[in-house]
Length: 143
Image 1 (spheres, rainbow, N blue to C red):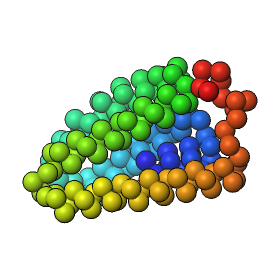
Image 2 (spheres, one colour):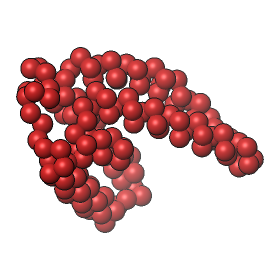
Image 3 (cartoon, rainbow, N blue to C red):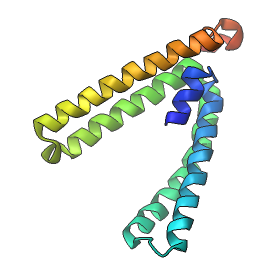
């Protein structure tokens, strides 16, 4: 996620390029992590089972997501990814509400606020380094 944010906000890369790039790097890291854990004999059965369950979803979902990102345009892709992130945060807070209690929920919300401020600073730094996104850098459907 941090690589995706850096590519899109700091280096002003098109999300249609940043999404498959960051997904491929996450896939590589995941396979490498499982291989290393298995190689040193520290791979827990439960982790391996979850990894096996997630692998087909990623294998099918990543190309589909990259294809759809190429169709719907920059702004719509950014909005969709943002909605997914907020939805994941709300779902996690809902599922972990007993563990979080009110103090943990408040801390989680503060952490998200700090993250948003950090992402905005990253975006502003990207504007300083690379300039704002102009209509020439995007297609007509992205404006």
